[in-house]
Length: 166
Length: 270
Image (tube, rainbow over all chains, first blue to last red; front, side, top):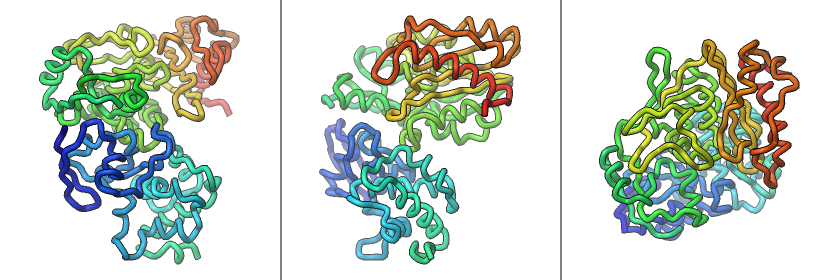
């Protein structure tokens, strides 16, 4: 067993786990944060993307022990419970950037990471290139790309994505 | 994934000691190759040595005519580094072609080079640039380092600490991606540094990364894609699988080598 302490969505977490526990397993099964999904379990699909020290990583290809002493943010940590959605979440709602919704948490966590690295003005080509590690089997990506562009702009001003879309 | 005991060495010396004592132990760097392999139960190391806490293995340093990059430096750091972009732009570009953004946030230079996956990008850069692999024990020339598929000159208890890349005059990398895995179906790295001309190929050979001496000789006469016209390499010794036959891969080596030379001299094909 291995002792780990980390910050998850702003809260300190301590646990004693089998070292082979994947980060995604730890989040879903130990912490019951089931917003992070397991799609392919082979680091192809991106449904499991979370932020580790602010950077997008695939939590199905990271051991929970590798997050020891670090900070993890999941889709549940983007907006406060009961509060307004994060601008990127709002943009996905507004532009219907989903159908079944399974890939959406990973898409949104990746989208926020794209904005961190590439800024608030994103063209379609950049967004599509940057989404190479996130797979959606429903939408054909069109609305996802629109949602990310709008969400990126909305993250700048703090304005809601629906306003940015108008 | 099978169970393992987990160690977090604090120094290279500690890690080397553990590695020498436990012959089947594996070093864990970014985990982007090792963890998938363990999940598929293709590997089941009884001990994992996590290198995260070992200091001094990360960083990028330009000194004289070489760029030295720490083994634990992650792909996104190489890709985004102004120092790399200025000194060896092709290396920054190559790092940005590995996997996807999330994979690049974790994967490391040392991990890739120690693993020597026959479809990986960094081995082509090391061999193409004539890099030196620096370990806790010695310095190994890239020409002597890559010894076959998933096989290297590393000895038991030997750990890569950094890699030194001589700065080329001209260089380019052309990668033909497997659309699903993002690995190189074939990748060709060409570099010219004085009279030293290198053509290194990844993805194609069934023994991993290799140099194409016939192309190098032709390019020594004139460093131009024209010098490679009509030149081919035999399909013998090429990988053949569901993604491409040996003949197809051999063909791609020629095509990508010509494109890489064109890019290196600033005249990329339209």
